[in-house]
Amino acid sequence: MSVQSPADKLLAWYDDHARVLPWRAPPGAPPTDAYRVWLSEVMLQQTTVATVSGYFARFLERWPDVAALAAAPIEAVLQAWAGLGYYARARNLHACAVAVARDHGGRFPDTEEGLRALPGIGAYTAAAIAAIAFGRRAVVVDGNVERVVARLRAVDAALPAARPRLRDLADALTPDRRPGDFAQAMMDLGATVCTPRAPRCDVCPLATDCAARASGTPERWPVKAAKVARPTRLGVAYWLEAEDQLWLRRRPPRGLLGGLPEIPSSDWQDGLDIAAAVASAPVAADWQVLPGRVVHVFTHFRLELAVATARLDRRINLAEGFWHPLAAVETVGLPTALAKVVDHVQAARRRLL
Image 1 (cartoon, helix red, strand yellow):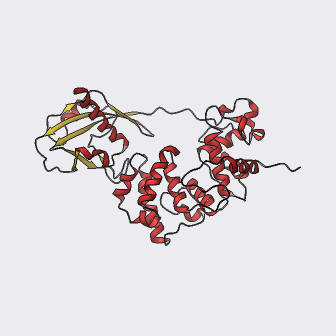
Image 2 (cartoon, helix red, strand yellow):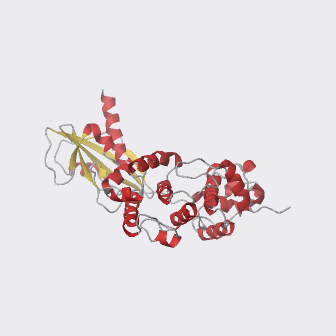
Image 3 (tube, helix red, strand yellow):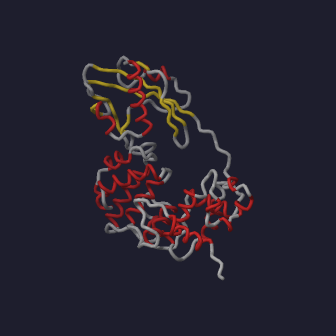
């Protein structure tokens, strides 16, 4: 009786337990359209499946193929992306669509090398598209796969330094047949069975091959380096109303939240003097600081925003920014950090009723 390889066990498990996702073909089916794979993979970077599903459907309805997305204004793409975070992904998404439509006749390259030459496509995304959309053998390693491999082989080196070793081990596991299904099976195993806490070793198809399970403490892996504390930056958001309109502006095209609309604010910096920032507001008005602060955690720092509000009798011409109907502020596509300012102001006003 032949011994099944880990890949064979995993593919058999996937045939019965694959997650049904809107961007995925069923096990054993022909590869999924590259546009759908690419769009879903970019959206899923550092975002949950539950969150992405709705965005994916709305993007497909609005821009059903790469040519349609390439023809869209970048402002529309950024607005549709609002809430997914990491907005450089949206700018790269649009740039990539433009490149595919302009330079490749609307068809994605079918090799990892060709895919990596496109804007915003790194090693992981190129491998995922090559395997899932084009059936090419590629080593697809995301956070779920890292966890599965680290446990399977009990890799004691800490992340992120362990990543080259984990990739080599994943390469050794990756079969030549059904590479797209294998990649998605590894992702599903990490997401539903080999979870960060309380892994379900009793139902894992790789349980008999797993060194971490044999140790009795599989949660020990993957080993992670000690976290570095995030610094806190302070700022003041300036909420200015006039004639039922709200003053907004657009952030610079490059940098954090680049190109997105925002409620204007001071610089975000360590040790900001809040009173001084309010006193030097960009528009002269009777500014009042609301109680409490808006808190938002970015990847590399924690942001606290005081919110200063003011109302003018009439709209004035401003050196920068634009007026937007206050009643429709939720539709303008504010990034999450600034959308919290809207919630903060509305909550303060409800308390006064």
